[in-house]
Length: 71
Image (tube, rainbow, N blue to C red; front, side):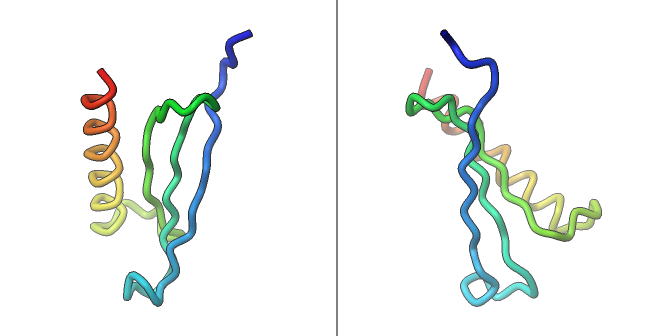
């Protein structure tokens, strides 16, 4: 049976590492069989501000690169 939902692995990157005021979270969506479906980067400040836009752009760029490599 093929699962109809992706799994997500989340890694916390502490503020001591980033120099930011709060931690970042890297979310890797995968199918459970080693295939990465997408990457998202987030912070607790999801307000559409510049840091939120930056993190979304980075996640999109990483996802696009992974998709290109896997093709």
